[in-house]
Length: 344
Image (cartoon, rainbow, N blue to C red; front, side):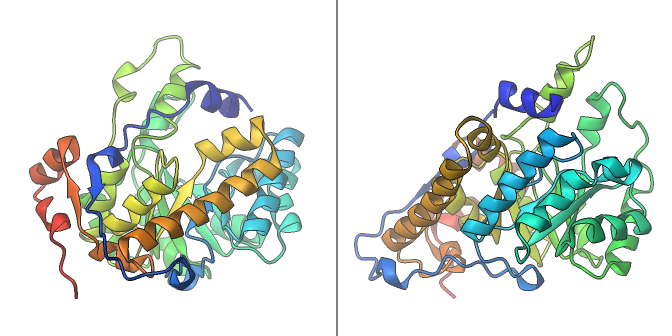
């Protein structure tokens, strides 16, 4: 619950670089809202909605049980997938299991993601999946958060080998995600050679776990608070070498951010911080309306661009400028290629 309150109080930096992307308007889109499909192509994940409720909470007793129950009901109502927060606390203390198991009880037929850190063993991964009858497992990478956390880990050796073993032996797809500091081309290239089914770039610009953990420290590690790869840049980094599913999260606020993520190559997008704020401050009904509005707004913008499905958005011209253009150029990518995309 401390983490939830700090997440609400620190907010989101919104420095995800999506503001550096501007679509080229199409005055003759030859499209209609009725012909638009916002269903994502996500293979084994079989997502129905282009937006999912990303990992937030669990393991905080009755309070987080109630919050996870609310989120699960919202997911059921909107068709969105949902990830729970790290389940390690429930593996260590069986009394915490109900704060996670509630999601399957409230959403018996929905798409649910289990969640563990890269320190997990294959057996722990299997237990986490069984706990909520999960359709997939998220393995989160949180080096900067752990280093900033007063009681956090200081040794990250062997993480890749553990991820590889879990991906090979688990019976459900494995998603590897960052926790708000972004995924680089180099990291994605390593994962591309494994059985990992998807990468969630989880870029800089959303909830900042360095800021949250610094609130819990006597001596703050301020240098980690502006650390990371902004979400827009991280999508391009990962998409360049990882040819399976690419999920985008990290400060995504609205349908405009979503559609820009799809332009850059994301297959689905996750929101956590903004959904948490709505859930805690306005309630279940308002969060359902918020997700339904995202669906509607996305379809409206796709109609204006003449994109009948999410994949078509990668063919829509957009001008990338400012800091994002500089970043991409420095990393060997071509911002101009998005302004003049190939049509086939």
